[in-house]
Amino acid sequence: MKTLPMKVVQYEQIAAMPVEMAGAVGCRIRCLVGEPDGAPSFSMRQFEIDPGGHTPKHTHGHEHEVFVLEGSGTVLEDTTEHALQAGTVAFVPPGVAHQFRNTGPGPLKFLCLIPHPLRGMIDTCTAACGCE
Image 1: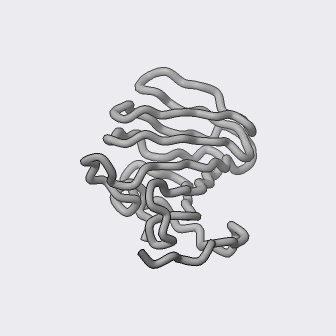
Image 2: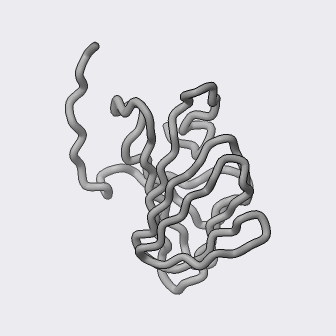
């Protein structure tokens, strides 16, 4: 098996791409680490949502592990809102309808990890978030 080099980079050097899923407003994503980097199990993405913006409300067959870096907002779990602020950790189980919303005056930034298509899963980072 070929060993890939370690990836060490400032996150701003990775382009922030608009989230193009229907229902996304003012939302950008950086795919920080993923399959193209040789990561065998998970992708790490960084989202930035403008004030008043949100991700689409959606559901899928994989979990999210989320860590809020900056800003404030909510994560909608089906019809229940949970407050978010810097330092908040959220786990979104597979199959749960969810949406991240920025309710603050500045950007809402968070890290989001998702599994690669392991154990029979078919969604890839591309299908899940528009990462190349």
